Each structure stands twice: as C-alpha cells, then as structure tokens.
Image (cartoon, rainbow, N blue to C red; front, top):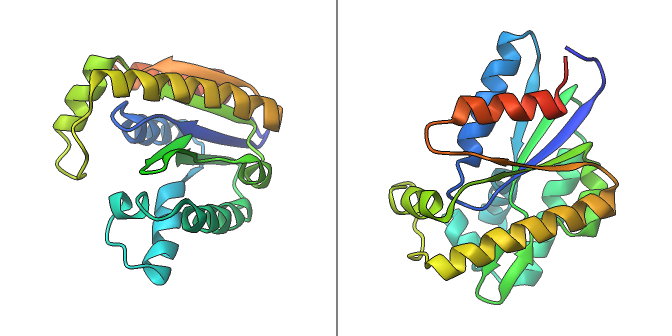
Length: 195
C-alpha cells in the first residue's frame, strides 16, 4: 500500500449505494493491509444537532433552517480536519435538499478545512436510485419523482466539478450498477488508492 496520505471525499445522492460502496472499499483495503478510516460527515453533524436542536433523525436535521445547518457543517469540518489517518475516507453528500432549496454540503470553507486529495462521486441510474430509495426502510423520505432525481444527479455532477476547482484536486465519477458493488469499489481503489 502506498504511504502517500489519501484524504478521499466520497459523495453521492441518496440511493446510489454510496455507503455500501464505502464499506466494500474499506473491506478490500483492509484485506490488502491498509488501515482506512471512515468518517460519515452526516453522523458528525447529527451528533452535534441532537445536542443543540430538537431533532431525532437526519431527515429532521435537513429541515432545519440553513443557517443552523451551516453551523453544524462548520463544526463537523473542524472535527474531521483534526483526524490523522493514512487513508481517510469522508462519506458525505455534495448537497442537502432542504425546504429552501439545494444547500451545498461542502461550501468553500468546509472544502478548505477537509483538504481532500480526491473527490469521488458514486452514481447510478434513475431507475436504480428510485428503487433503492423506495426499498430503504431505514429512512423517511418523500417519494421521489423522476424529474427530481434527474435534477439531483445533474446538481451532484455540477457541484463535484465546482468542488474540484475550489480544492484543486481530481474528481472522478463511478457508476454503481445493481449487483456490482465490489467492481465499483475496485475501480475506485484503483483510481485513488494505488498500490
């Protein structure tokens, strides 16, 4: 395993299978002798949110006023930026769909605090995303429309490249087709965690 530090931010809209892909990346890297550390940005934000606001789920948190979400983002970025790891993987979203519109998950100061070496977008087809969201019993989500999902995918791609420009690091997109989690994880490892 290369000794060069990797600080990889892996993003994707809900339903692309991002967290499953991240778990597979960790499993593969560990089998190869790596010691990756995963931080879920939303979990760090949620821990702080439950201390400050009357929220009980991430879906409650995303409905907070954007000013409150902004403070939670800054707190999370500050916490994550202090983690020392050879292979840090930050599992997060490029934006949060709020009642006020799409709110960037990684504004400029958050990106600057995280200092990513790579940005990875996990994607999927609209059909795959729709099916995965509808079959996810762990989340309470509004029923997605195909037009809304297409807009989310487009926004994710646009924000990925804008974020790449801001932090000066490479950005890559990988399609996570149904039943291809291991292949997707291997492609990401080959791109950003070279041996």
